[in-house]
Length: 439
Ligand SMILES: CC(=O)SCCNC(=O)CCNC(=O)[C@H](O)C(C)(C)COP(=O)(O)OP(=O)(O)OC[C@H]1O[C@@H](n2cnc3c(N)ncnc32)[C@H](O)[C@@H]1OP(=O)(O)O
Ligand SMILES: O=C(O)CCC(=O)C(=O)O
Ligand SMILES: [Zn+2]
Image 1 (cartoon, helix red, strand yellow):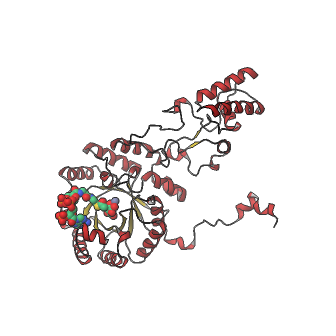
Image 2 (spheres, helix red, strand yellow):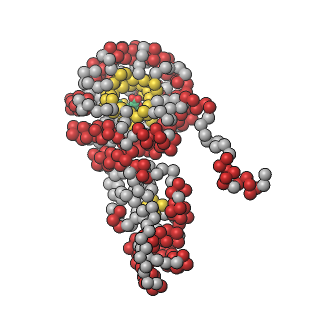
Image 3 (tube, helix red, strand yellow):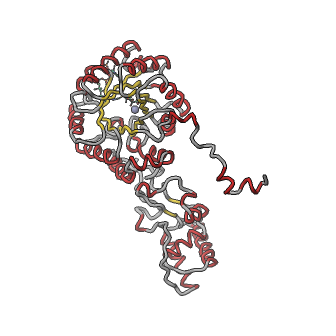
């Protein structure tokens, strides 16, 4: 085969894709997962969080209309108001199932089952750190109290999940024993929790694959983001056969939080587009994030997947040219799937004549390609001196146009939206949400 033939696009297209699903992926739940949103439990443990009763109701309704499968609420024993909030949310008649999260203790379980929840998430630490310094109980005690709590909750006809806290620093034999025990007595789910965010994707894959061979119930996973692995860990867990992932809006939670709902949606829409698009109301994501961001007094980070202000803004000339020809060249996510728009940032010295031509068209001006290249050079010269605004670029174009030609109206507009001042909160940059971080 000649070098030319082996590298031609048509030839490449016929080659098998090495990243395609592998036969060993039969356990994968990547295209069949569920979300447990814990914004109103783990999220309440975020340093800045205080949710009033009304705000909790508003957030619960918004989560439900986004389409999460479960909503997990703070333990009703945390405070009197927490119990009332839990009872009120249970009465809303939401489509999502309502869970509350308790310690592995009958005192907590007795209160939880009276709240009207659809399910109870029970947790107890199994690492030596937590067994020694948190609750002080050994594995025999844990197994005994787990069985008592599980059987009690089940007797009330309510879903029950048993989880080991700090699973990735727990002894594997201890984990297998306790999970086998609770599976045998009929828990709906077992949970594993990377409580301190120490796990990496390979460890997650191996633990979930192992557990999947040991229990018959569903596996839920909870990943903290201390070392930046929360989303990759969640994805690997699903590949290994976990069914449910705990998420919070914007990832808020204890310390720097857990798997963010939006970030996981970005990952999953690439892996299972039809499933994700048909199941979740993705265009509601931004409003949901704004609701929670406002409630906990933070702004959406600039680099947030999907909703970060520049998540769909293309700047360099090489990128802009290709995006104008076909957005898939530099976009793995389609902003329209999330009710968002894409932007071309053309007011800078990295721009190219193709982006400027698109702007010239948008301004209904008529210049030849040679003229557009000339005006592009003028824009770059100015961009070498200082940051440019859209007004700066438009003025350069309009002056150049006036100098070289009589304007002829041109009605055709490209499908791509070039940013205008109207689209922006700030003039110095381009994107849909340019609020500066308060923290
Ligand atoms: C990793 C996680 O995020 S787990 C979920 C964390 N969520 C919460 O903590 C909910 C909010 N918490 C609270 O409101 C309070 O901590 C309460 C009401 C649960 C308990 O309050 P207090 O009785 O005052 O105890 P305190 O918070 O100081 O200590 C925790 C107690 O729970 C016990 N405990 C901790 N984890 C567990 C567990 N999983 N199962 C059973 N008991 C546990 C500890 O031994 C300790 O009891 P002790 O000091 O009476 O021996
Ligand atoms: O209940 C669980 O599975 C997780 C509890 C928790 O928040 C954690 O361990 O970080
Ligand atoms: Zn947690």
